[in-house]
Length: 83
Picture 1: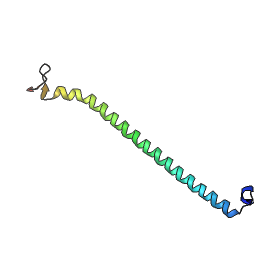
Picture 2 (picture 1 turned 90 degrees about the vertical axis):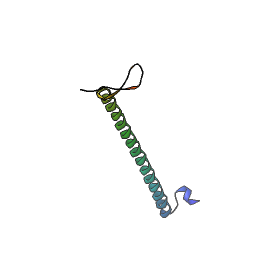
Picture 3 (picture 1 turned 60 degrees about the vertical axis):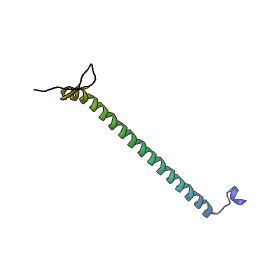
Picture 4 (picture 1 turned 180 degrees about the horizontal axis):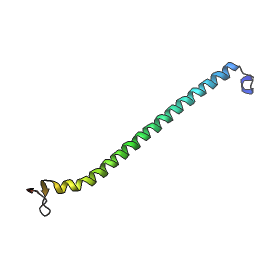
């Protein structure tokens, strides 16, 4: 009962403090890992968005220069001879 009122041993207090310190370290490591995972996901998403934008910019030009283009009326490939 004396432990409740501050009369406990120093060993018990030190052990409790050590357990709390270890728990804090584990929590900090978990949060750091989550932050790293989120940063990685954001980086991947940004790279994907940039790739899509590049594909859109270059896609139109490629379609115009293509030797095989779609016929606008029929929607079927039509061979265009490039001279």
